[in-house]
Image 1 (cartoon, rainbow, N blue to C red):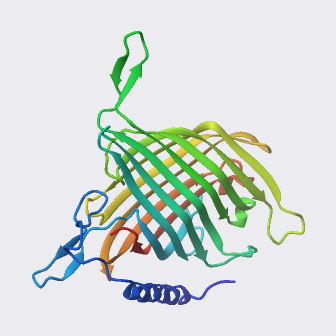
Image 2 (cartoon, one colour):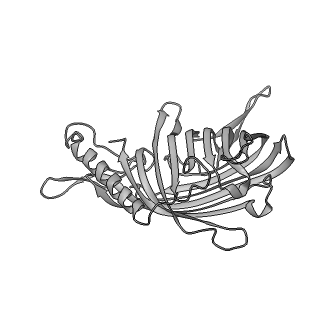
Image 3 (cartoon, one colour):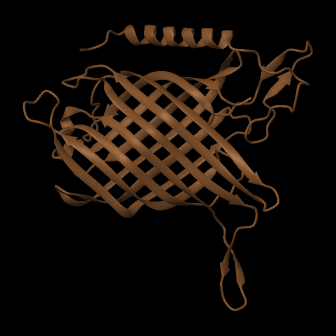
Amino acid sequence: MRTSAGAFPRAMTALLGAAGALLASAPAVAQEGSGTAATTTSGEAAWTTDAEGRRFRVGFDPGSRWLLGGGYATGLAADGGWAGPAAGMAETGLQYRHVVEDLEEETAWKLSHEFLAVRAWLGDLGTAPVPRLDATLYRSAYLRWQRQGFLTLPTTTPQRVPFPFNIGLDVAAGRFETVPEETGLAARLEILHAHFLLDAWRSRVPGRFAQFGLGFGYDLWLAGRFDADEPLGTEHLVSPGADFVAGVRTETRDGRHAVEAHGSCGGWWSNVRGWGLRAQAAASYELVWLAINDQPLSAYVEAAYRYEPFLDDAGAAHEFRATAGLRLGITLSE
């Protein structure tokens, strides 16, 4: 089945219209003077008032929102030719982040969570019973900031040594991804990935980090085709603490601009093929350019790469993807 050229724009128009109606019917936020002034997570004032007393949202939190979006994505084959025409893509997800502070100890935990993040590509389904999906049940990051980081040496006379990093942990659980038939797989399931992190930026502000770390992962691959007479095969992949990750992100104080790049590379063991080196990387830029009933509408571009050495077809081992689209973020914070 292939969607018509106009189906995706009509679907997105209906989606944004429904979201606009939802926002219009939502209860009004507290007026100025009814409590503490609202700010973004970076401390920037989230609202301003004009000469006529009307309030406008001028600060946004791209890490706390119910996301509704769509765009177009295309892949690039390993030989440099386009793998196919651009396909429509829809996405949704729930993101939330906050800071837990201990003023007396001068420490803070920067916590971020993402629930039910789903992307669906609308196009030729091939033999798959569902559109191409990339869905993650839960993803989170926990970073501990301290004004003066240090290590303690438990000698007879304890020694304190400066430590120039924040420490933290990231966890991703339940990622399900259907893949093109050329890979020889029907789907990939990332059961659990977790990494211990060091953050060299040491910023207290959420959304700003320069981190790296090591961790482990367990994946399950479903090999074969959905329409084949034979049952799907299973392949287990494990990284026993050898998966290296790195990432950097920055946002403007008002939340209107966000830039991020991240990647991973590490040794994985397959119960079918033995050891191999897997890698992936992505970079993105997002800009809030409009607000609908004080809810941000953003445009974004993204480029991603993945290397999978365990695939039967060496030509399918390299996957490139470029994506551009719009996102409506229904704000979860004041």
